[in-house]
Image 1 (spheres, rainbow, N blue to C red):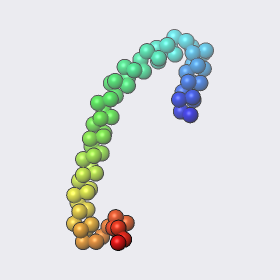
Image 2: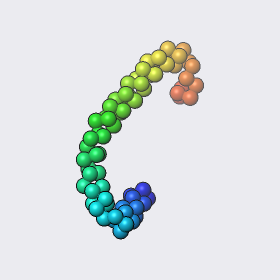
Image 3: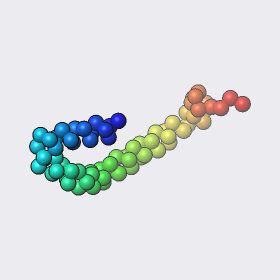
Image 4: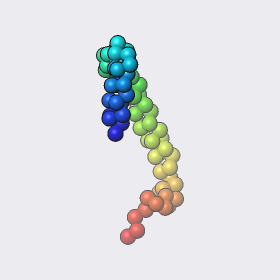
Length: 73
């Protein structure tokens, strides 16, 4: 659905101002490549925080504090 909306908006921009629409079409892959390292850094930071949280919560889980994580046997 997002792709359809983006396509309709681009077609509308193309009808209203075709040079800007063509410029956006050419620059989009370049902007995506420029932003890619920041997205990868965000993934790494999120993973680091998840690891830190898991390490900090490990003693509580070992002592039985993680009620939903336990499996009823």
